[in-house]
Image (cartoon, rainbow, N blue to C red; front, side, top):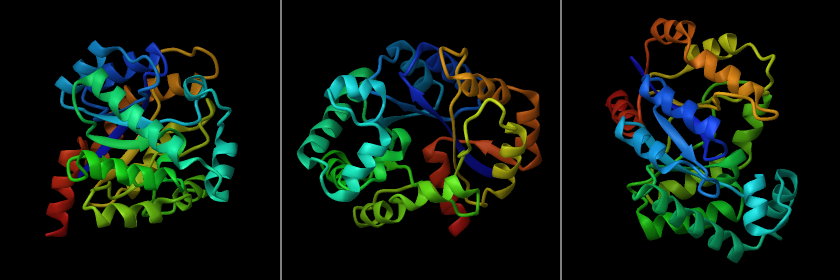
Length: 268
């Protein structure tokens, strides 16, 4: 049996996301949820997700509309990448933003995050990854996991590029402070409503290693403008076809603790 973290992104972006994730958690499909602390997630929904055994994580955000409003800066992904790799990204601002989002997560959930990742994978960028490691050292590196975006198999050019944008550098820093990560990463595609999700998930589940990994998803109950791919993901993840794929490849959705246990058993 392969143990796979099925992680729903962007809780707090819109009620349609929150409700879809809560439903899929209740049905035993989604096993972890990334929370945008700058958004307005429903506290009761967050509590329900956690009570049903799914992990709650902090989805660090510098590039969404919510981040632009919170920090009064035009920090879309291209401009953030330019600043990070050119050395012009303000480290003090980054540290304050991370600390603020971390504290806000605690206010929303009453707990530490089970894991940390990033909206558009910004947590692995230069300057941000250093600030993240410092935050983990202050708040408990051994209790909080961090997403690794490196794929162990070839899963397309986009997935490869995401992994190259800092996964190895972040992994080295996390290893020094004994912070755990996922064994594999999947779920990257063009996010179009025309995408063949059955074929995508077939490839991801078929290529998942024995020690498992993490597959991200972006479900929502309805399209509120440009989110048609989210509705399609929600419908597919809740379908009998998806359950049959999991059965075919002996995949069991687990939270981060279950993933760590499976990885340890595989190593031994």
